[in-house]
Length: 395
Image (tube, rainbow, N blue to C red; front, side, top):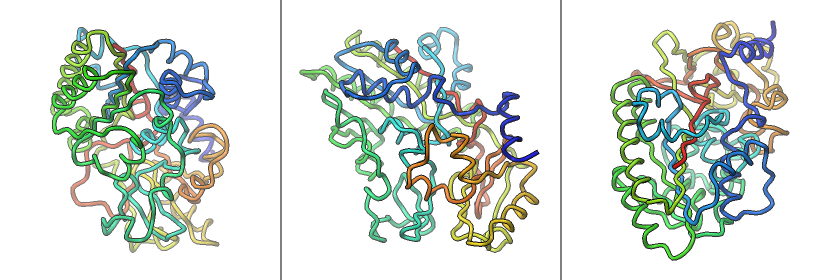
């Protein structure tokens, strides 16, 4: 059985979810919000139209993006909790189910195959630099990409939708990232407010809407659920406590809005726990790395490989011998044909960044390059339901 057939069998069995524009999804949410905010000319799928109808019109829109809040985490809340009682529908995340891909889709209304920012790490072939994309740094030295003469517009190439919103815009993000390159890209033209705690962010959102003299769009990004789930695993008590905190604070936000605004709550992805037996590694001095132009990029759940010319056959053989039990190895062309990164052909920038091969886990495994001694407990970016299903909550 070919690796493509193995993947398709996993889709059919339900162990993995196949990305599809035919079910309500995260790109639909982006386009629905943009349309309601006054952006014309966007093509809406049936799913996007249904989402727009459920959201409805309002003078004030508030979108709270809770990083890592997959639908599975809501089950630990009481049935009468705010998030569970206001759950509207389940959305399919984009693939790879990771923050940088999702937030860029939210900002652009495009699938990762089109917007070109699919993974946390990317090899920028034109500069010969391995980048950590969202913090805009070189992967290994941690120095800003600007030290290599790389501009934001070279990495984030797709135009964003919010500058076209016909309303005043505000972004509320942690203080540490208020001036980041990525925040500037996704929040261009918005008033950006930094916060320390979620309670502080909620108060700032309420104050902004109370002072508004016209229609507004407020975007609140909160990363602590994801951070705890990475560090301790998604089932840890600290994660459940943080989800409960999110529930309380967003309930307070909804109460404070007093019906003046439409509150939307969603997430970029969920997470899974990865045990010690699911941890695999490629080292700088091993037989796979010597066949590569650059270190493996992508994500530990979806590693990406740029292979030296004439070495494809050797790479496939070595990879499958070592990791074929846990991963399927697909060419970039196969990933494009299966439309895993969204419908239609890849943009040129995507084609460069996904390299020659992508490895997709069939279960709960990761493949890291030169991993640290202290592994994370929780991961995402894969195709399991836990990673790919996110909530849409409306109040």
